[in-house]
Amino acid sequence: MLNCAQNSRESQEHRLKIKTLSQQIINLAVAGAGMSPWEAHAFVKATEDVYFSDPALSQASDGQLKYSCIAINEPAGKKVEDCRMVTVLLTLFAPEDKQQLAFDSKQASIVIRRRRMMRITEQAREQEGLLSQEDLAQILMCDVRTIRRDIKDLRDKGIIVATRGQVRDIGTGLTHRGIAVRGWLEGKEPVQIARDINHSLTAVENYLEKFKRISYLRRKGFNDCQIAMTIGISTAAVKTFTELYNQLHNKPFFKQRIAEIELIGSQYYVAQDEKKDLDLSSSSCKGGRSR
Image (cartoon, rainbow, N blue to C red; front, side, top):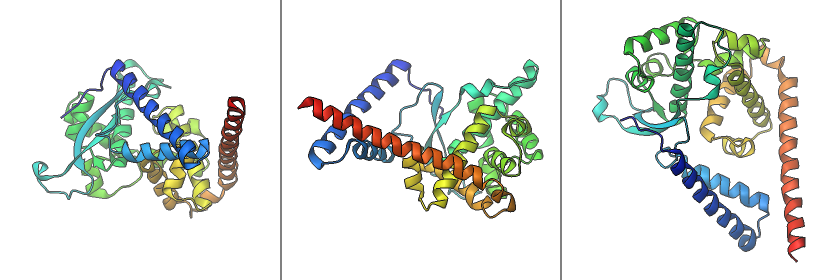
């Protein structure tokens, strides 16, 4: 059931092949369809997102693995062997797992395991799958009782781990990303939030930056697909943050952060427009030199 990530050489060859094929499509789109280079790149990126949104077709990178789990829409009580399964792509090892660990070695190992557990359960849910406690025990190579203890301790802190049992019993709730965003909206700074949820500062800042950008674009009327293309993340990841936006944007404390959301969002949006103009200008220069 558990699949190992393919070796580095195979991954490099696969990525190189994809880049070569993508460049061929870009060239055809520019020469044959009259697209600008920026439009052709955007078109190919969107195409890749569609064709490789299925983890079964995606290539696992270093630190990732493919795993089969029960589909998110399967009802509780149904026999596992009768449930529809989906393949999800999980990031088991990430640099931020070991950041800001002010603990002894035993406590640090617990924090690292919980960070990984929170990340991979959310990744599975974003890909329309749910991991069980048994799945987590197998992936993280520990006892199921350890997983249950971790889930209980996190739940006592108000953090929901999106396992199959948790989601089916109590609904989606707020995961650690939601706790981080809510804390920021209530006036907490990233360092304090990272300490509250025992997460790395890098991960918390990443959650908040994505939330700001997505909130800005949502307020401008962008849909999930448009946001994904503008920011350069999957539509599944966009949905995770737009769910948070829908839950929290009418709260009084959201208004206190609107100015910062508008500032960060507009800066990023302008930067993307400038990048587009630069790509078009660069293409024009290349065209001139070729003549």
